[in-house]
Amino acid sequence: MSPRFIVFLAASLLLSPFVRGEDEGPPAWMKEVTRLPPGGCVNLRPVKLEYNLSWNNRVNAGKFQISIERAGDENENFIGDASGQSSGFARVLWPYDFKARSIVDQSSLRPIFFQLSERDRNTITSYDIIFESERQVYTTTAQSKDESARTNTARFQFDFGQDILSSAFYLRSMPLETGEQISMIVTPFNRPYLANLRVMGKETRKIKGTSYSTIRLDVQIGKINHDLSLKTYDHIKQTSLWVTNDEYRIPLELQSQISVGYISARLVDLEWLE
Image 1: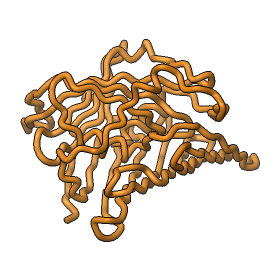
Image 2: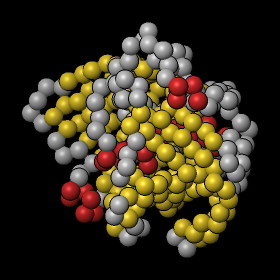
Image 3: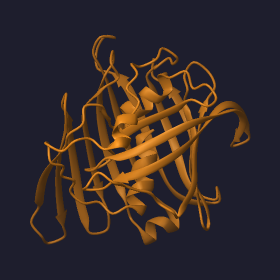
Image 4: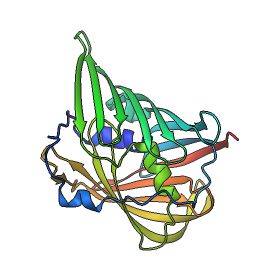
C-alpha cells in the first residue's frame, strides 16, 4: 500500500531533512505506538497489484503498480517493488514518476531497507532508509537540472518504525475488529509520520461495478516535526481505507476527503504470483 502514500503525500507535503537529538526523551504520543507482535490474521501471498489515482473518481490523476515476492524460502525476506506516475491533466501540471523497493523480514514483518527514487519536472531525488534496531538512518540525494547533486544524512531514534510495505503487512496481520486502534510511525520519504488507524466496521464497497465485503479503517496522519511535536492537516477532512474482508486483506481503496471533493486510489488489477 505504500505508493498510494507516496503520490498523495508528495503532492501535498513539503519535505526537508529530519534530525533528532539521540539523548532526548520520547514524547507522550510515541509511547502510544502499537508494539504488539504481528498477528496471524492474513495470508501474505505474493501478489501484483495495480491502482488508479483520481479526483472524485472522475478525473484521472495517475497510476502505480506494486509487486510483492519472496526472496527465498519462508524464513527469508519479502521484496516489494513499486513504480508509478502522474497522468492526464495532472501530469501537465505536475509531471511525476517514482520507483521504490522495500525489503521486509518475513517472520517479524519488520522493515530492513527502503529505497525510493522520484522525478518531477526539474529534480531527481532518491531516499535510502536503513532500519536499525534502535533507529532509522535516512540518506537523501537531490539533483536539480544543471546543478550538482546534494546529499544529506539524518537519523530518527526509534525502535519500531515502519516503511510503507511493512506497515501494510503489520496492519493486515491484525484482527481488525470494530473499534480496534493501531498507531504506527511510517516513513515514506526522509522523515517520519504518525499514522493512527481505527477500525470502523465491515462494509460492502463497490469498485468498478464489483461489490466487495470490506473492512473500513479511518486514518489520521500527522507529520513529526523537528521538535517531535505533531502537525496535522486541516485541508484533509477525512481519510478512509478499505481492505477485503477475507484471508488476504487486500487494500481496495484509499480515499481522502478535501475541501473540493476527494482524492482516491482504487484497485484496478490483481495477479497472484504464487
